[in-house]
Length: 167
View 1 (cartoon, rainbow, N blue to C red):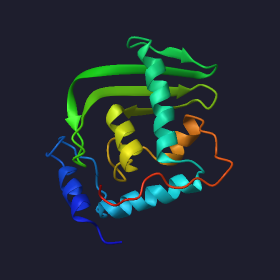
View 2: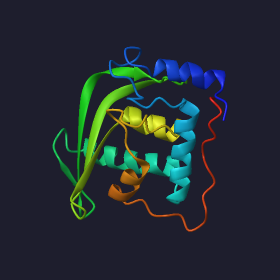
View 3: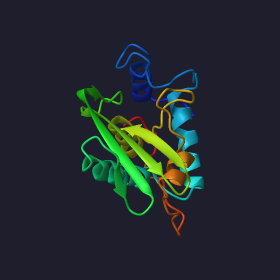
């Protein structure tokens, strides 16, 4: 699929040294539209939506905030810790938002697995369907999030909540 001018501009913003020193694409050399479409396909295959994944991420982040930087027990088999950093990051999609630097770690004690993510990742997933490029330092595979955060599969086939149009 041809990449829109807005996505070309966003991809330029994602390069190392523009917003962050390591960027958001890692060694992934595909066009942004191809990254978005592949992740959209995977999320649909998993029977969920980007918005549902982001909501579950926010749920754990909010529960972890209660622990004031220490691991907090959530439900019966999760532990969550949130660390806040100083500063904010702008969205490379130019949606005119600044995102707080905050890191969340969720441990699923039943699976003996954990996942770490940032508020930036939550925003990018929820509003843009963007999990970062393959090999990127902060890339999170959709399946990893669905499994570790124990998202329930929709009974009905979900419609995509994001169409990569560049807006």
